[in-house]
Image (cartoon, rainbow, N blue to C red; front, side, top):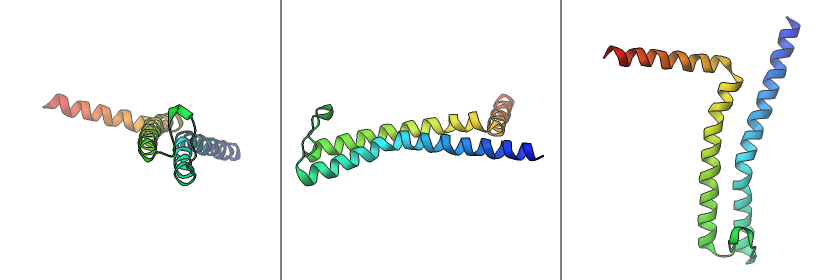
Length: 108
């Protein structure tokens, strides 16, 4: 019983680390773009990163929105995959729901 509890705690810890890494990977670019926007607007700092002039508000607006949309979309796409990978019960329930939905569609 003690070994099973230890295994569950270890697995839960790994899952938390995985979700944290996924969150950081997909949200750090957004934080960087906001930081560049803030520094660029307030200091007229220009940087040749991706040919953007960070002191120009229109560039900043499009760049920030682009990064936000891409990172949020990727984070949203990866999270269900991590759930399916880490939680077998989640995958089993999903398969059962899909089977039931298929049965409902074939009846009509």
